[in-house]
Image (cartoon, rainbow, N blue to C red):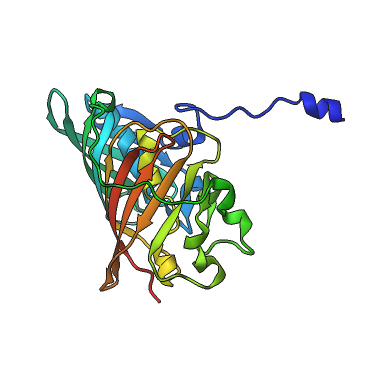
Length: 288
């Protein structure tokens, strides 16, 4: 038995282009500017599909529709909650240039009567990340996160994380212990969330998966003492460079919760200690 187990093939690490993320964000060209898609139940939070996953799917469609393949700036407005099932993405080329191109995309799903419901609308600028210079002048600082082995994931808690669901099985997240007081009923009140991030199947990050990363950690509202769904209203993401292989470090902060809304500012750093993505989103705070 031991010899048979030793000879059993090991599960291969997923690669960019051959992973669950790639399959679940795939789009199929129906006609020029129109793509069919299937929203997977594997990326849901409670009953809604995760906003970062949706952003990556629309980002893939725009990368096929535009002459440039890499997202530089992607701004999305979430109009209605998406659910698992079929969807159609309609794209429009707004402008093309030598180094940058801009496009629009909207994702629609179907009501019971067959009519279309727009779920999310995106305006994005694409380019070639490999053509960027290596010059960096920055005051941004690498987030102070303990080593990964000293951070905690969903399996380390005494109970399920509030609001956790299918998406947690597809992510490899280890949170800074300083930002998980909410999990034991003692939120810090600081509105911070930090941790290590990867995909559970080992797939390395690329520009498209960074669109997921910025919206994949638990909401900072948890550390403000608020639990429950925190739906995104608007999310703008900037991809700064192509990430190096290896785990990512993510830091998210909220400075202002007012009128039932809060902002979340995210930074994503790669294994080479480079700031590879930034985002800001406006979200509705959970109702107490």
